Length: 226
Image 1 (tube, rainbow, N blue to C red):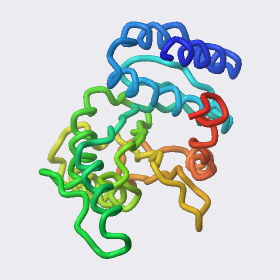
Image 2: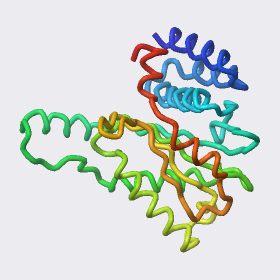
Image 3: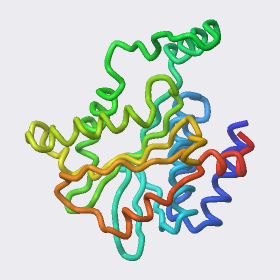
Image 4: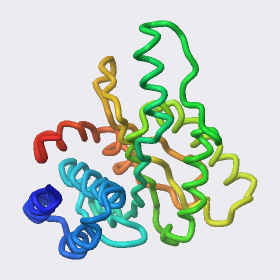
């Protein structure tokens, strides 16, 4: 199963013009026996495919995971996968049991927005000096990490940047969120949340393109049948 996935990824990334595909494939092959790590690495591919399909040039790399260009505008992206957790299973069972009644869900030891803030802080040393940097968050945790949670996390990062509490956090320009759910009313499953206080501004053309990025579920289903 993993080998079939690897073969598809290698062919699609190469076909779409991604750079340094072989190094990314080696990471997948090295982790083929670790299902959790393999699933995390797959999210780098999903992000790369999304960018490629929306006109970006993509280089697969380490720390941060992606180097990206759009009309000579260079920036970097670190990809984070929020895994499906035991709490998600508990919440799903609650929702199925109550059949439309209200219940508490997403009861974790730490507020979910703080989990995102912690991720941003942990990634500070991987952000590139003098260039815009973003986090790409792919969520498999529908009851803990959703689009409203990401906006709250962005507000908290803005506060940390203003307070200069965590040196380096000011290099983060925002979060591109790959949601578990497809919002029917908005017809979206990808959202970009900008951090206004970032030290290196991100270009208008890149921001405008971010708002056009959509359909990661469709790409995954089309290429991998998932």
